[in-house]
Length: 142
Image 1 (cartoon, rainbow, N blue to C red):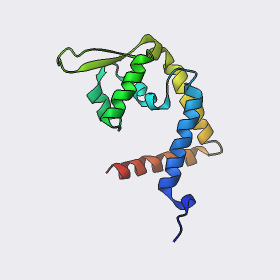
Image 2 (image 1 turned 90 degrees about the horizontal axis):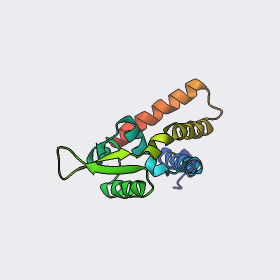
Image 3 (image 1 turned 180 degrees about the vertical axis):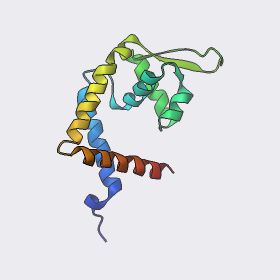
Image 4 (image 1 turned 120 degrees about the horizontal axis):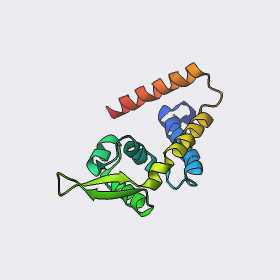
């Protein structure tokens, strides 16, 4: 029995994620962040000053991946770490002015990528697709 990749949701979703990341990379490189840093930026734009543990709880990545991402973001001047006021072992992660200033441009880049991916979809088709994606993610998680 042959594998039909065009009939495999898992294969197609992986390809879509790869293309989304590629499109975002094209847009984000000029802004000074990578697609892998975008989820961290989003969380910190919503609530600045989270700990690494809190970020891990909100973003589904491995601890080592998060540590490397944060290290690169600090190197690139996107975040800074400060001692946690109530836990000497923890640090709070804050966006720099540079990262705060990227918010609108980053959201515009995401909107452009979303528009590109959903080009030709009618509104209800896009909403239905999003609902299917959310349900598939929920099923995959658990």
